[in-house]
Length: 368
Image 1 (cartoon, rainbow, N blue to C red):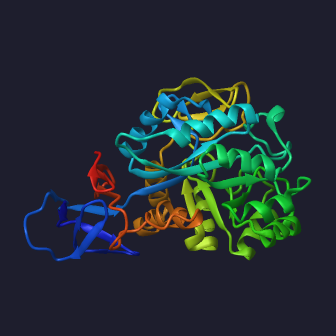
Image 2 (cartoon, rainbow, N blue to C red):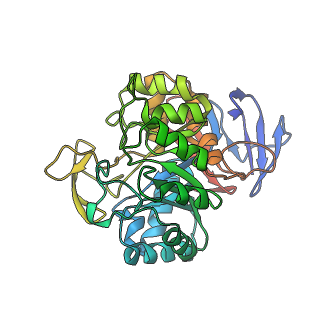
Image 3 (cartoon, rainbow, N blue to C red):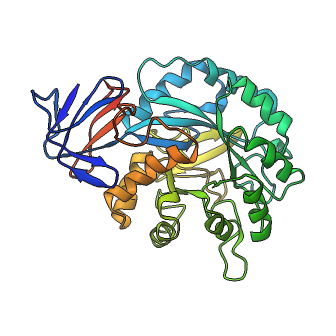
């Protein structure tokens, strides 16, 4: 397949080069021959990598429904996401294990690639549980983590933990040898968070949400993540984080900023009533909350929506794409995706000058 005449994002710069690829990118530069896809007037960017997404189009990874996984793969590809981490909720082991088995056994027929699992819990704290069900919280437990990882076929790439909970530091020391450990849904102060990062944590889950505020005398997880060199996530739906804070956070964290969708089963669906981890949620005007409360419960956006939002908020397109492709791939150890380079997976997204989606390629196969 040959894509020609587009502005191709190589590193941080858009270049006037052509791409040749099969499953991987085989040539970059001025290429002879006709184009299989003419990207004239368009941007060609790496496929987006969503490391925190619970579901969409009425499906949720925690459901453990094998038949729900292909519609999710198709949805992600239709929104420019070429790789994702199937993200689960705080649930009992007897519910999480079948979900892990479904993800392990999934064989996609097109669409985006499941690059692993993100366990968002159950190792979280009560006070900052947010939309996570309190009755399913569990103290950090490396043995439970290993059972769930085994049930997934060894696919857990990211786990969120409240580092102030009993046994958390030992959990982090053990589990960080297996996957990326993230701090989140936590009341940890700066010193406790720094101890967690020293123990092996290297990431922070949806920064600002589910953690203490960043205060001048109490910088908490946010200040510790900055000092420790950790990567961080932001939900950029325009509801969870003010645009000024997104701009400031990008200035603070730079290449360590990861855009996520934190999308729920309501993404790609109309307003109405839905379910999240056994709890009812209501979506109104695209805003998802626990029913009858003001507690935000994830988002209804796609990662491409987040890219468009942060560009509107003031980031450049190369900065936004880096935060939604290269940075998340690096954060969870994905080495073959997230950039356009020789030998990397031919996961590509073509956008017009208004950032409307024109084409998506996953492992060289056109999906959109």
